[in-house]
Every structure is written in structure tokens, then in C-alpha cells.
Length: 361
Image 1 (tube, rainbow, N blue to C red):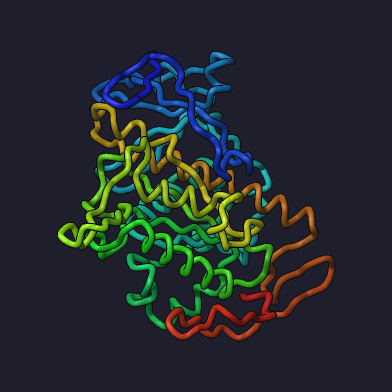
Image 2 (cartoon, rainbow, N blue to C red):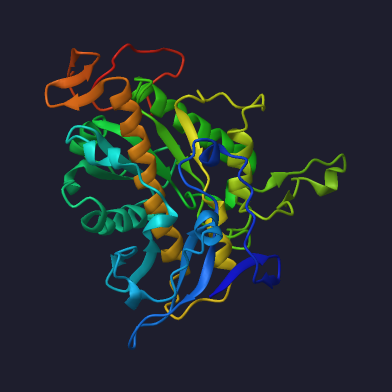
């Protein structure tokens, strides 16, 4: 089994070393790892690349064939009829506490097509991982424009949105990309996340921003580019430059936004976190496997990481004696009753005021 890594235009058969400076590693949601290629599949089924953690590799836990899957370690993800892949269960340890997720602790995806595909991969894994967990508690809300997030939402969706207890934001490329430079992108993301903090003021309800699942070369012209300045009037308006980087430029903007040492970080770090999946996108720089589903492979591993994320969060809630109930939020033996579901108006809400509302069901 060849372990592959992509750096610039060169390929290597050595274990990849990933930059884990962001909050995903510090939260211990998922271990670092690399792609192995190929995984042999019996019959006429094509071969697959599979993500393994470095611990799997060190312990020589390297699967060589899908047909030798007697211990049910290889799981199948189906995003739709034409998009599927395999994930290795032990590469992403999932706390058993996920089993304790109640019917009133909703996990919500907010975002573009990437959010829908990650959720589809997540739900396709559910019967293999936690079949007793019912799918109705995992919601999706469309978002392609940070400045007008609810433009395609019904009133029912606006109310249902306020029931969420874990929020996952994934927007691979927002609308108006040709005019959205790095500073404006950062401003829009920051404002949107601040609105989420206000819409869900309970500090125990986490908000995760996912990095873009795109390679550095796969970016719309001008998206997240840096504005340059010039004293020469003939050069104005200033051109936009895409910096030399191993990441999609919007991911570099997110890294800076979530840098705890940066003065521009105005988000509450105890609640709003960055889920860094950039270590996975190296497969998008490699030649396609036999399925042509490199993007699907990435999203499938992201889905596994979300299982781990949710499991960790449920563990935290139960450790503080907190659980979502039909009647409201039970915390330290005290029931905080539900309140009326009122749509949050992103356009009208002021970010200078706060609210004491703590529980929505």
C-alpha cells in the first residue's frame, strides 16, 4: 500500500506531516493522518484511497482490501447514487457518548452544497455507526450569502433553526465571489458568526466554522485575494493578489480570523471554533482515483470527524449534568423551560445588544 502526499508538483510515498496549528487539533477532535492508495476491492469494484491516522500507520493497522473487512472497520459512505467512498473506522475515534445524544439536541449544518454533501455522508454512515440514533435530529439550512443567509428559508425553517444545539457552517464558495476580497470575506464571516452567537446565546451550544474543502488552485478569480495599494493613480483601482500559499486563500483568511493571538479575533473562542480540514485536501491535488471521487472522499472523512465532534460535545454536556429534554434544557437538575420560537432576523438584529434567552426546543 503506497502512502501518498502532495507538495506542490511533487509526489512522495512517505507519511504526510500536517500543520495542526488550528483549533481542530487542540480540541483533539481527530488525529492527524494521511491518504493511502490504493485500497484493493474485490470483483469489478474500483480501487479507493482511504484516510488513515498516523497512529494507524505506526501500529501497522493498514487495511489492504475491502474484502478482508471481517471486523467491520471499513465503512461505506453514499452521498448519492453516483458518489460513494470508503472510510476506515479506526482512523477517527468516536466517543461512545454520541450514543447519548437526545432527540432534543439537534445538530445543524448551515451552508452551501458542501454542507449538504457532508450531511449526506454523515447520514449514510449512521446505520453502520449508531443505528439507534434517529436521522430527524440532524438538520440542514441553506446558505450561500453571508450577508443574506435566510433568503431561501421558509418561516418554518427560520423557527426550526432556533432549536439547534450544535451548529456547523460550511460554505465552499459564497456568492459574489468575483468581488469578494479577503478583507470583505473576513468581515462577512465575522458578522455572520457574531449573529449566530446572538441567535444562540447559550455558551454551551458550540458553533463550528469548517474550512473550505478546496485546493489552492481551485479558487474563483479574486475570491479572498488581498487588496494592494499604490501611490500611482494610473494603477488604481488597486489589483488583487493571491498570495503564495499551500491553502485555499479563504482558508488562510479563516486561519487569521481564528488566530487567538490576532487583534482581529473578536469571536468568543470558548464557543466559536474553526474545524480545520485542510489536511484532507491534498488528495484533490493528486490524480483522480478510479472513481473520480476525490472530493467525496474528503467529505466522507469530514463526516466522520463530525461524529467525533458531536460525541465530544455530548460528553461535555453530560459531564456538566446537562441534557436537552422535550420540556426544555435540564441543567444541574433544574429545568429551563422552552421559549417561543421566534425567527432570528439577521438583517434587523443589532450586534450591540445581548439577550438572556438560553434554551430553545
